[in-house]
Image (cartoon, rainbow, N blue to C red):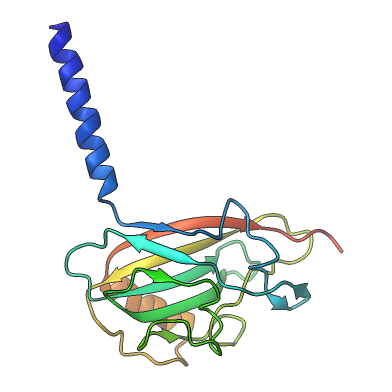
Length: 185
């Protein structure tokens, strides 16, 4: 009886770890628990480098025809949060965005991908810039596996419209969260 429990426990551990290895996963070589001056926005009183982090993903579900990436701050004092980055129509064979890909002048995103308007009113990445002394804000970076190759939107689409199209076309998504705060001035 004791031997069968041990065998059952080992089988459960092995099958559990095999299942976990096949989940849709997003990682970043640049981000830890907190964003840094590298990712911080340069404007609105912030003086960061405004460099989008490197992102990579694996184990996209079957049927994925494209990807999208967003960065969102639900803690922004706006009543609706703050959209920092919206990239969509990323080709299905892509599994990484290089550091700095959010700078639209550098052409580092895959051909055909679109970076649309953030809540800063600009296209591309706009890093964290919470109000001074407002405490830690969470920044949710999400990759979406989509059932369509293109959303049918352009670079002037706002976050609400992009979000609506993502909601209607998502097969799976994976997120990482980083935090950032500014000291009181």
